[in-house]
Amino acid sequence: MFRSNPFPFEPSLASGAELQKTQRFGPPFFLITIDTEGDNIWSAPREITTRNSQFLKRFQDLCEEFALKPTYLVNYEMAMCPEFRRFGRDVLLRNVGEIGMHLHGWNAPPVEPIAPDDYHFLPFLIEYSAPLMRAKIAYQTKLLADIFSVQPISHRAGRWALDSRYVELLLEHGYGVDCSVTPGISWRMPSTASLGCKGTDYRKFPSDPYWIDPADISRPGKSALLEVPMTIYRDTTFSWVRPRMLRCAANRVWPDNSWLRPTRRNLRQLLMVVRQVLSQRKTYAEFMLHSSEFMPGGSRTFKTKEDIEKLYSDLKQLFSVASQRFTGATLKEFSEWYRKQACGEVRDECSYSGQTLAAS
Image 1 (cartoon, rainbow, N blue to C red):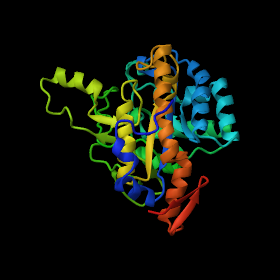
Image 2 (cartoon, rainbow, N blue to C red; image 1 turned 45 degrees about the horizontal axis):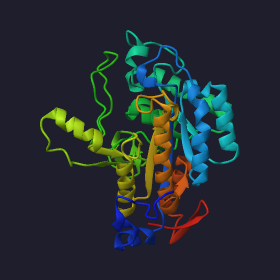
Image 3 (cartoon, one colour; image 1 turned 60 degrees about the vertical axis):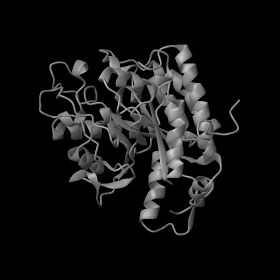
Image 4 (cartoon, rainbow, N blue to C red; image 1 turned 135 degrees about the vertical axis):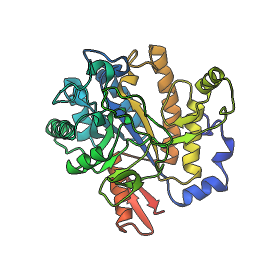
């Protein structure tokens, strides 16, 4: 049984001026993004398996129970998996989700190693040459279109690595929405392929949707590519704690950065992020997880069947809140709605996904 108050840790939210002010402008969108990739990629396997495709139906059924629509961002090995092909085609046929693109440079065709051992170092796509980047994006885009009979327009970069070249190539291949930006987070690290390239630093990037400027992807521009950043809030509760080891221990209980991303220990933070989205009248909340995290042993976080049951317990509570306060949509649907607003096609209100939303 769920609690009657959908925000068990924030009882003041259920009623009050803050929530009423949010509702005046209609419910925001709840966007579910799933990086759909092989089993436990974090372990850098030599042979990538895709058993996690067998565990996605339970998650899809849960989303449908709460009228939410996942966007599966699919990489090479999952596109080649017969089980996932059947699953993805069914999702599209019933219009209960979306297939987009996700790309890991080290195993996406055409494969040309750039590190001493690409399967060990897992290079960012942006560490490859522009021609090779173009070839990989072209191959994966066509592969998804051929398999699912739908041109993919939604995208997330593998390992969150995006740069201006990547944005130009996404535009060249017809993508209309990206969700690679993690505001407040830096992925910079020593180069894996000794080319002097590093991950992307998103600490000064916007946290709201914006049309990416290909010349400077950290600022709004006039391109046709909509950036939909991950929903992440910064919390400095334990920022004062010293020494570092104690702070790291505290962060396991209450992380500095709160994502809409379950970890088995963060239901309270998940619900508080949702509260922030509503109270600040954001247009969306963006959830993410990896497909392998729905399978026992498919990730470092959910290792056992008990871990998976805890995940689903948390998801049910989170999705119950989302179904009451948000409108479920895919990335493509959200981008189409946002584009209409930008083009002035939305006036006082707009009808979307069976609900009437006041234009902000």
